[in-house]
Image 1: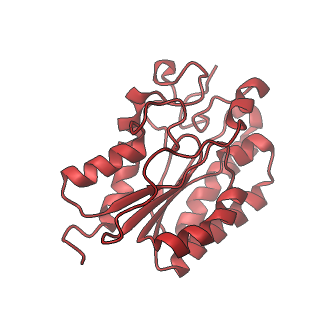
Image 2: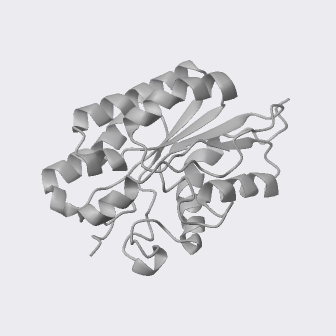
Image 3: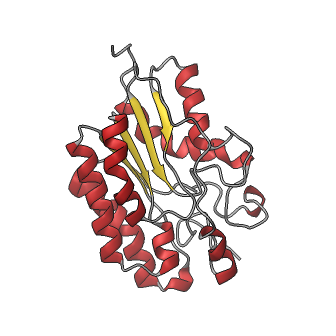
Length: 227
């Protein structure tokens, strides 16, 4: 049974059982969205895990693909590269980021990582250090950063639950980056919005995820043709 947000709603993932957790640790699944953006446009990179990688969804129906479509509809001239991988941790994202920065030279990096750290029992200090490094490396690469927050369920204990979610807010304040408080806000207590594994949001839930992220992203965008 999934806890309700925001008190405990788990990253998608009412991930109380080892069986459900195993689903997050499956063979890495690279997002199917286009990863070769138009070189003539500024680039948004999404560095995430399965929730952003369209796990279990039809092609180009996840929230990242919907963001690409919204940019096009609003005539905001950006490319979107989905660099999300199922099962990824903050350590994995930290290791992958330098090559992404060098290759894509993004204007914006959206960081949606940390949930799998909790599932694997990674110390909070390690998660925080990895997220801090990811943000700072992106900023050093002249990218603006959006940090996407998550919750873990109450069975982790109130102290861990509060500290885990709190680290996103603290990093947002310290490093002055916009924060999405909770990616799954609005769906975490709705079982029908999750796939059969009760971990990954359905196709119908993806517009809600985008609406949660969009207010943090839109102010960073240049609405006129940049080049």
